[in-house]
Amino acid sequence: MRKSRFSEEQIIGILKEHQAGMGAKELCRKHGISDGTFYKWRSKYGGMEVSEAKRLKALEVENAKLKKMLA
Image (cartoon, rainbow, N blue to C red; front, side, top):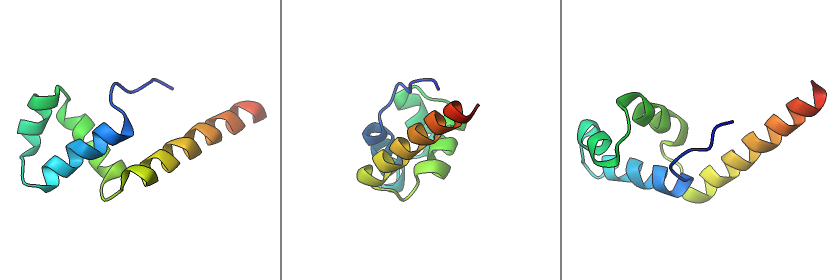
């Protein structure tokens, strides 16, 4: 799994900027991300707090390890 350039805290911060009224295109230019990346993050992390996002990431890593063990 590829390591993201942005941490969960940064991603949620970017999404909170959008919720505060900044446009998606402007956010993408400001942070150097594609529109697709922004909308993928919004669908995955939208409405989450940082602690929830960290828990989700930990579960995804654990799930990947378990799948690898079974393969």
